[in-house]
Amino acid sequence: MVARNEVASPAPERVWTIPNLLSLLRLLGVPLFLWLALGPHADGWAFAVLAFAGVSDYADGKIARRFNQSSRLGALLDPAADRLYILATIIALIVRGIVPVWLGVSVPARDLLLAFTVPVLRRHGHSVLPVHFLGKAATLNLLYAFPLLLLADGHNTLADIARPFGWAFAVWGVALYWWAGWLYVVQLRQIMSDDRTRGAALAPGATP
Image (tube, rainbow, N blue to C red; front, top):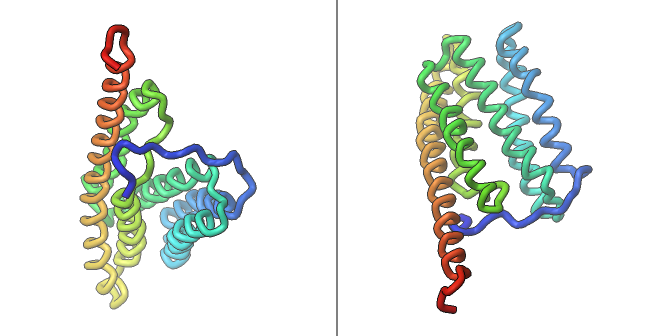
């Protein structure tokens, strides 16, 4: 886990990398998933799109670290794709009545609240906070939960097996998602405290 007072180091200005291509393909899959889930209700294909999103999310991180293909663009595309898939799946599951509204609202509500911290972070000279392990664990739980809940929308053996696992991942995912959000707030408060300390030390008349 990244220490609370650390910030992400600058990444190279790369565009054409394999991880970025995978992230772009995941982004293109978002409208395809929505059409499959809400149009023809082709749940098998919709599940396949979500499965590709989960596998590619894991693969692009491994490739970026293994072959030194990290980039600033990738640092933006990867979490954006994750959040769009989560939001798209929530919309589809709520529209189809598979999950209650409170569950769907609880996830984007956290991101909306954290959005208010962005101007504060920028005033202190930082663009983004580093993604820590708990945040990734929460996202993975949700990315496992929603495809399983989609499969659970039925009256067959597969649905009966998928349902308890889907709800277990969903409950844990939401809880970890909010916990991770609180840790981001703690990181921000630590940055603000460190900046105040440095400002006091550099103020005229301060004892060196």
